[in-house]
Image 1 (cartoon, rainbow, N blue to C red):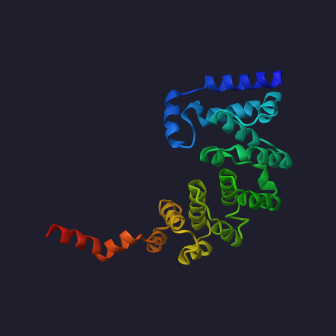
Image 2: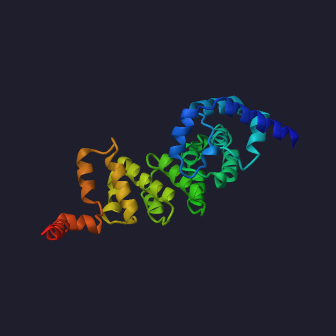
Image 3: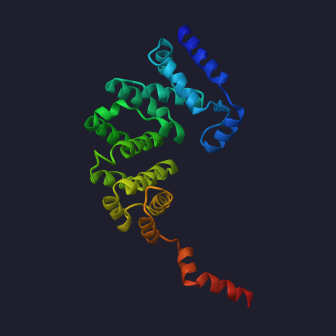
Length: 254
């Protein structure tokens, strides 16, 4: 235990030595779910270099065995050490241990293990398991992995249905669903557009997916024009389109 504590202290000292106060202030504003006191202010490239230096060492093994971490950057370092894992079985085991401790969208989205690409069928089973999780960021991670690895060569139309079936009140899940469908429109337009035409997503997620697709450089101008026609308008927008709100305002002025 004493040696683990020394390893933890050594890594924390390294992290604080790389702190950037301006970056901490900027990044804190992007992370509303994280107490700013838990953000050190270490830039991502520096964290990746540290992970590369530590991977496979006794210090890294000790660090990975201690959860939960206190600092945001400790979680990110943990994620990058998992990414470096060469064994599929060990990678999945470490992911299953770590995912329930993720508490923000950034750590969730930057975690992208590479070894899983060599096991697409086995990894798909894990993705479905994570997508069924109650924990917000485990579910988000599952959707993100499906988006990252299964919208091109390994794509099947049924994957769209898996994501469309998700119902949640969690903002960070619904945003990932929207991001998934915006990306799917860029990569598998013909199969994906049906879900928007048939309004198979909740209204907020439907509109957010359209917004993100329109903002994408991978969607053609013609496709963007059509997507705009599929937006679900609010009651206020419908009244504005009919001129009812303007008429009511004019009556008040008379």
